[in-house]
Length: 145
Image (cartoon, rainbow, N blue to C red; front, side, top):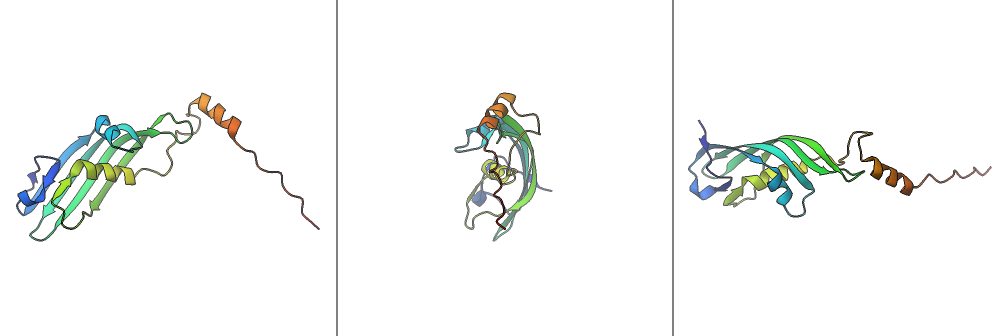
């Protein structure tokens, strides 16, 4: 049976060999407060399983929820579903693990490359403005015979 971690800031030297679990939520306040983040908010549930051995440890983290980012087309907020379940590598010699930060990083690396509303759901004013700045394709050059 696994023991519960008491905090999301884990000091490895203070834990006995064994298996530990933790569950916590990353809310809008936390997600939006990170420096240089593209996340505007959200609600993501995280679950952690930490197995500590004499000489090393395994860390598996699962995140599931929804985050809010700016749409690449209209810049209005768009919700993105996020789900990831991955073993995580931690720097050798680490003495502390900030589980909230690791969950945040897992969210960031699992975001899709493009963030946009489904077709037709972008802000119509911004879509119209974008259309006025789009370049049309250059006319085709005639083939030389």
